[in-house]
Amino acid sequence: MNTAEKINKLNIPKHIAIIMDGNGRWAKQQGEDRIFGHHEGVNSVREIVEAAVEVGVKYLTIYAFSTENWNRPKEEVDALMELLVATISIEAPQLNKNGVKLEAIGNLKSLPPACYEELQEAMKLTEKNTKLTLVLALSYSAKWEITTAMKEIAEKVEKGTLAAKDISEDLIASHLCTKNYPDPELMIRTSGEHRISNFLLWQLAYAEFYFTDKLWPDFRKNDFYEAIIGYQNRERRFGKTSEQIAKQS
Ligand code: FPP
Image (cartoon, rainbow, N blue to C red; front, side):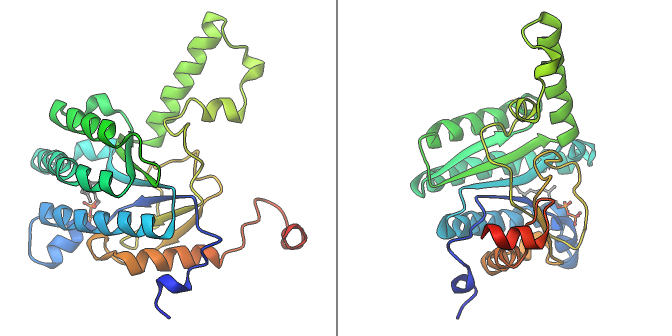
């Protein structure tokens, strides 16, 4: 039985979030520049998107560029932005053909205009697709997202259009960039780091975390399937006891 066949098709996470880490270390291992690792990382992204469509994942959110990544050396930031523009432009027709809808979360206005425009074009091209929603987290950080949401809510209270007593978990969630997506059930991080790095802090409250030592450019379809199988072997209790969960099922 191959790895894909071991997946229980009745228990596929609807939403998977990924911290793609290790491109720089992978490149170093090959004696190459960091950007070479990012280029190879795009091949992993392509494979994982294909795999997500194949197994029926509905939302895939990938951390492509964090707010903190702006602090990297200028040459790396420029190269990453160029890579993003080129990748979105090259991949958009294929994504469209495969029924993938491209969306993005983050402070998109802070992206270079070429990147912002390419993204808008690709999102427009793919907006009617329903097989998989691929969400790029770009210039994204969860603390920025939550702060922005809090400001919007405070402004509504100040204007009198919202009463403080009506602030609920659902209301906060409806002010986040992810308001149209269910929370991820599974978060994968590559490269042996066990951190959340300011990614979807609110939305990952009950996600299962899957860490692998593989560096992102080495993370391919079978690794993705292994992560899903790992998730399927966990017991999700949401604060309840094992006995309560057993009774429910
Ligand atoms: C983390 O590795 C990776 C990034 C910050 C960028 C990820 C970008 C891509 C894979 C390419 C663009 C993707 C799309 C969707 C178009 P790192 O540089 O932090 O690696 P290190 O920890 O080994 O230094």
